[in-house]
Length: 120
Image (cartoon, rainbow, N blue to C red; front, side, top):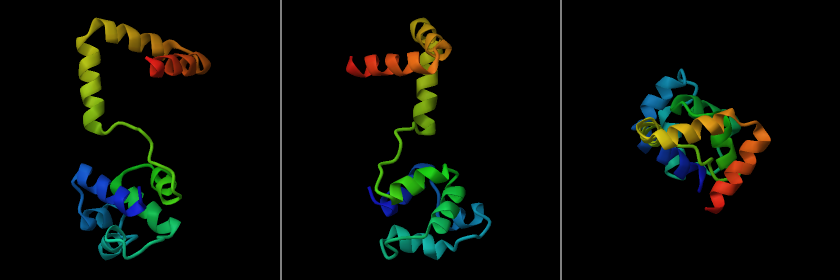
């Protein structure tokens, strides 16, 4: 995924315009610059530019920087996915118990549990 595709994807998911991103990052970057990046006219935006866009899109700066360096974005849930997961958890005693157990685990135990669950 290119940084242009990533920005466009986040803009679509969050229903943001370039103008809204410009406003949200306190005008550190012009909406026209964002548009040029999304169109692919700017191939290698600076870290400063990417950080401003991240603030305007309200995502972690590291996420957009990773994509710009050719690393796929994290598999973090969207707000909608998180809400759907929470709804399922609270409506299922089994899932509630499983999540509580996972939350009580130490880091190493949690890593082993995640590895085990990925194999299922």
